[in-house]
Image (tube, rainbow, N blue to C red; front, side, top):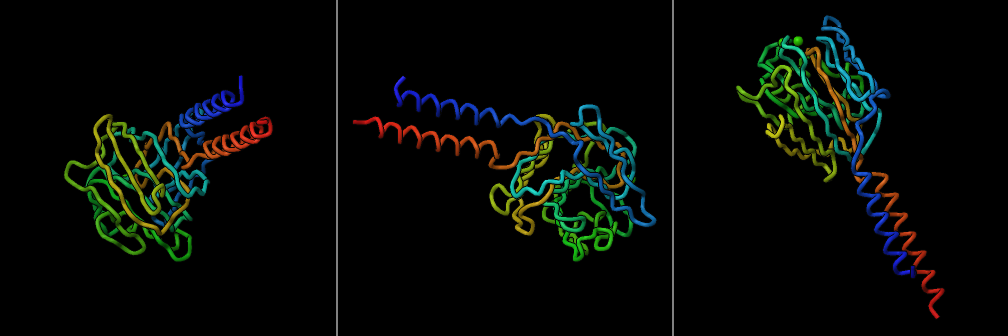
Length: 264
Ligand SMILES: [Ca+2]
Ligand SMILES: [Ca+2]
């Protein structure tokens, strides 16, 4: 095989390896961290239970705002997975946190099954993208249960970035939904798509550059039996892709040098 052919096959091999790395495996959740903002007089602490295999977790209790965080401070990533409420009891919040800095500074996607008043605020049925900005970094000090419950107007340290509220926009008991997030892939852009099977329920893009990196996590509030399964969190660009491209460039340079040396 001459140098030109060798180089062709080397690059073709690298490209096929690169495309293989795009097939991500579900995240092992065993290293994630549970956190509940347990308020005095509130509803208690969440109980996050991993399932065998560590790719699914269920929060079992009607708890205060409760998170399950991935401990990775990534600057741009996609997230894909499925989640559902596995009970017909209650009608409250389930969702996700991202761009998470600490327990009082993060973005939140949340979804309420039915409209309801609590702690002096009224939650509307449907989906909301929120931003929390607390002064101290301690959620219990900065944020109240009311700031978590409100989902229609800015309140305290919580800003509403986008909503999808209607009388038919609540989640349904025992129905599986898919979550897709593109976080900061285009700088300052949050893109979320919620599907039920092939039906797209919400496709929304928000521009906000307050937090341009941060953790990802699952979230629920005052809702038991929320199950999250088969999640993939993919940094963009993927580190493997970077490594492959660098290796490809190095190899191409090496082959070019060798060809020059052998040219006479
Ligand atoms: Ca309720
Ligand atoms: Ca509840």
